Image (cartoon, rainbow, N blue to C red; front, side, top):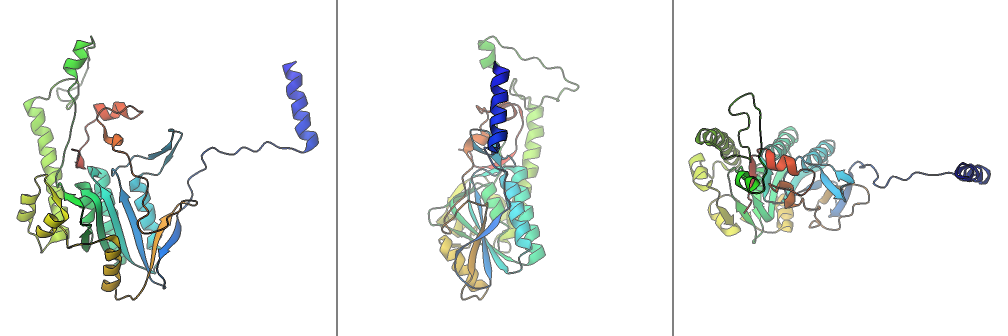
Length: 323
């Protein structure tokens, strides 16, 4: 009987000329398209957004069924598109980020620096809410750094965190066993305390990555700041916009439209198109229209999601302010 029902249904579609059309629930990611936010003229100023945790992870689009490209991949794609447009004379980076992984942060900085060297385009960073640690690291590529009056920045440094769950697991009758090829193969394991020697190993790596941070800031802020002056500021403290201006970590205090006007003034332009790049059907109405913010849960040490095991067992070096 069931076979006959399917046969009748198939004959119905054939006779009536109907067809079954499969529509994907989440369509594939489309190429970027340019959108003009404001202004006129042939010359363009490109607005880039760096928001949320700086990571190489793809961002979930909803319910975990589909993922968008990572922040690193998106910035690379936007810069590649910008390279092919000779009418772009300036780039403004709007930064609202507490930082993120060391590698993802450094990749974005590198890509921006390469674009700057290859095109000679002027770059201005505009720090909005929070632009700390890796957020400030990225801003160091800019020719000028402007911070909103209420911005918080600084937090220059590196951090690596873990939970030691050994006693907790023993209380519930769970004991971890590891077979390893060398004494330090499970260094930074959450299932046992670190030995003093292992802490020294991790600290050496932290110090190396911290020194790289200092060099990046020095490259962007010299001759206003010496390397020794930067080291004194690089103890992890955070600064208000006023404090950052006094410490010469930023060049001025202002808003995003001030950054636009500064860019036009530096380029000797009366007007320019302020443009951004969107996916099709993704609308931005003004220069303050932002991108979805990457959730802080992405760097939770114990995450209730598919990345939880990696988060609890892996060592992550972060240019991140994580209070």
